[in-house]
Length: 566
Image 1: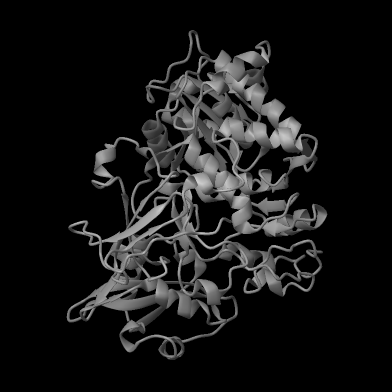
Image 2 (image 1 turned 120 degrees about the vertical axis):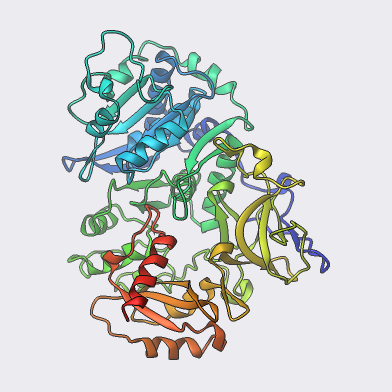
């Protein structure tokens, strides 16, 4: 990444990245322009590999990705899509997801990826909130049948239309198409949808793509819903494209990298890191629709994957797969030495993952970071320096007053990837007088301008008059070899205000008790930070969001109930 330049005045906690104009390695700043750039650079190179439902392996070049994205764009234009209209994309990581997102951008629309983890009630909420006019979907995902779900939500979808379809439930929805068998009623087959635009000239798409500016709305992603109902977060093309160009250098990925993930591209971090980071390097994305550890290892071996992006709970499943020991993972070079994956007998990597970073969906992922290969000695325990164009400040939560360097407060951010706004919320209600977004996260800046993030302000534990960051405690307990997952919370206490409670899931076969955890924590933490209670749970007890975040409110209720019974 680029060298950071910061300005830190001891009197006020404000840190700045280098000017955006000085950032190197950027290309076109629209989604359609990004695709066009990478296709021109890497046309005949392999862009993606996908194992179909019948087991056949499908390979696309960059030119294939362009041509099929153009076909979606033409179909959307023929379907009547207007500039700025939203196109819902309800799919797993498959080729059609990518062509739907890029096709919508080329046609002048706004792609709105929707989580395939959605229940019927959540899907109804997201369709209403997003106001999509077109919904492109994959019919079957694991045990979900989204065609049947949609027909239950709006029975008219399943009826044979006597006139152009208009939803009786979702007032803006007028067109649907699906990947999979059994389309009926208003639901078009994927092939039938593409055929609608088959007669359009390429110039129709080119003129539309040229009319899209970096400042125009480019993508609508949704928050994970770990603390409340998901928010619709609208981002400009520039913000999305900037992060896509940045992710390869941020990860230290070489040209031609081969990347694998099963984490949904409907989360902004997965999209920017894998889709942006890989394609901007002329690499190949190895797609897996849903996570199956044994199949994932087979694909990594067969496709000589260099970079895998998985969540910690998936690492454990990979290690526990029956083919773990036998799989040839020698091509994996982007594996941090501290990762359990690095213990595989065929993995030999000196890569240091870019763990020192901070971001939100509201800034379309990272706003501060150190790049890959940054040592702990250089980064300390910080979460990095502001990326180009970004300004970070720490404010007093109630007044909004900027605090002196080193004082803890609320993190506020401003920069070129900041969202255009939340759907249904006036922008003035989310920005302060200087245009900063108040994140609701707590932290502080040091004298070098580095951010130290401490988690959600409402997650900060106030115990015995002191403020305690649960993240600091979790970092210490996570280093205990028997611990698979930990989340520390504050539980109401009659004298302390809140009691520090660590909730732990152990590795299979591991044994640990409360006193052992407390003794471990005492070696690195001040006494008031050591958890007064340690509770043990099974993995199935903790409800995760689709992005592998523990639902904090649910955990507090579960912990309080367990404490009452002990």
